[in-house]
Length: 122
Image 1 (tube, rainbow, N blue to C red):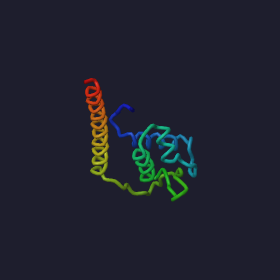
Image 2 (cartoon, rainbow, N blue to C red; image 1 turned 180 degrees about the vertical axis):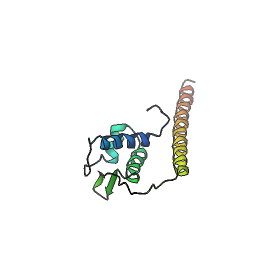
Image 3 (cartoon, one colour; image 1 turned 120 degrees about the horizontal axis):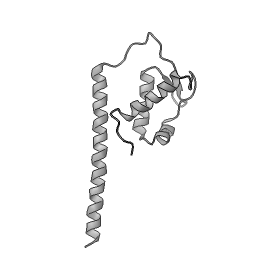
Image 4 (cartoon, helix red, strand yellow; image 1 turned 30 degrees about the vertical axis):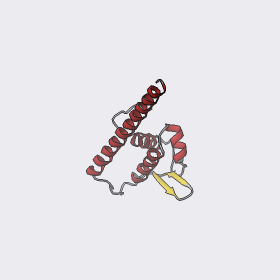
């Protein structure tokens, strides 16, 4: 499992692609990896992959076409900021809640395994 660094994983992935675009490793029109490819490449869930692509779109670094995929774009200087600081805080909070729920689910799995092992040992 990936260690938590204080920033949501989908934001880390989006930031990585933004940097590659700014460094001109990726240029406008280049096809971005699909959700499935991101899942494999970064070992994340479909939700995280989808959120990363969505963030790139929202920030103007990607354009998506139904059935074709997402492609690199450059944000325009006159594009308005779409999210308020409150929205950002809520998004971060929800990411933390999801992480905590995953940890709880993993812990429940461990506890259930322990109970099964003890039951078999009787």
